Length: 219
Image 1 (cartoon, rainbow, N blue to C red):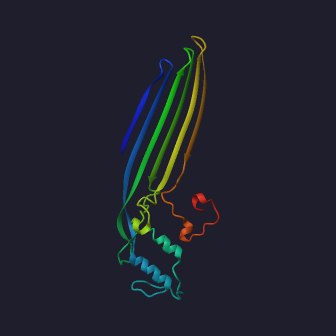
Image 2 (cartoon, rainbow, N blue to C red):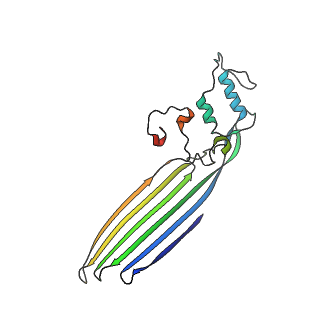
Image 3 (cartoon, rainbow, N blue to C red):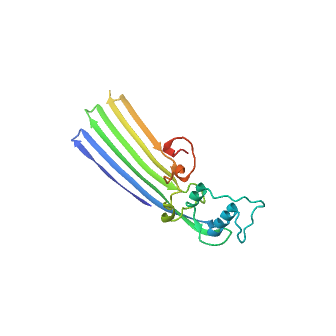
């Protein structure tokens, strides 16, 4: 975990106008380690044997089995699931490590101007950007190596980029030694996207998702 920042401030016009600027940042990385049962090449071969009605040692075929071919969608999805190179027909526990991260940057700028001893105006602007990537739920698998699936080890993470902004003005008028009038204005915006940490198009896998919003690939 790393945190750092900087500040800068001072006069623009002596005894009249002053500014202040700050920047803060955080970089945090983690690794979630857990044990999960892995598919094996033997289990995949057994599933294909049942689909095609092909006799295989240790595999029981359904009575009256009608041979079929594996669907393209299933084969495409299988490429994103880690399969252990082992002839076993039962799952094998393996250790899984999925990286996560959280990073953020915030900037702020403030300016104060004194028209006179009775009239003061200040303005401020703050913006913060953050990104979080973490397991979507406990036990989420990491995809196979990049050269197999084309995805990184954190591709199945939940990914949430966010941005917050605030703009504000304040005008103060000292009417008398005991009375002050102040006018304030503030505008805020917040945006966030929640989604998977990948750009896999379901339609490219053969999944017919219908004519929905292309921003979320029709899902």
